[in-house]
Image (tube, rainbow, N blue to C red; front, side, top):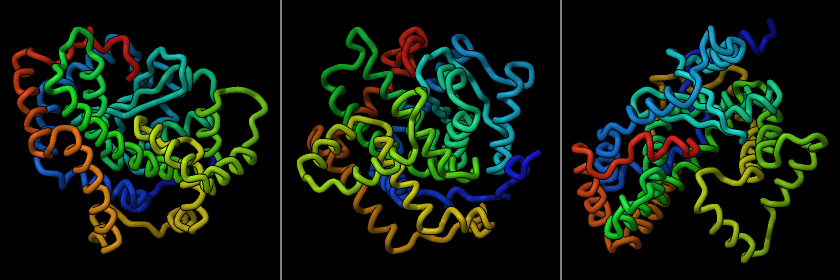
Length: 341
């Protein structure tokens, strides 16, 4: 048994490694009037139960008797972050290399078969560790809301009316921006769990370019540095506009952010045992408060642009969601079974 297999960050708090953008965006999301109420209503209408049924019916739950080697590795990774109980793990038949964590109350990790089949064990572990970072940070609540909104916006047959479609998309865009910040934290968790930031960077490179031979990590790191140093303002604006529609930052940006964090010394400090424990999280400082205000302003601007006011947008969405308790507008499993999770 290797050192890494017995390594554990006892009682580590997610605040030990979370990216400032993630902490700020999450705090800003919670501070937007009515946003929490709308998302709670979204979570209350049975979507988690529907999603669980889709998974049970169209995926394989990994366990001690189903792909036991993968289950054992997954449990070991959860142990490194001192996560208990270990979330359920599913594999779904999808040729892409990807994974995600959902579940408003009970997190579930879903991994795509293309990842498990085509990528090396360290790369698969880096992805699983990334998802467990989402679990420890409790990102899964907002991630689930994001997935449900994506489902609603894709449902065929006009289930989302024109009146509510724009406000619903505004909420979706706000959650997309939050999600991009959250990914930066989980990349750090991945590096901490696998014990080598370069493995996480390699995973990012391979997920961006595919599982092909001959990829050079050193060249990819240099590419990430060139990306960060781009001086053309139009190029910067263009890539920001494209990224606004994505749930994940570009892989080169994630790589650059991760290696900058490692270079600042935080990775080695945490590996050495100097990290924040659960229940000992310090209060937010002035620097974080400024970042929270920045994200809150951005979120409010998106909502106001959609329909002329934050309250108006969120009340429209809330009113539209209310009938779903009686089977009105919510998509059922038949609507999403073919979609990517």
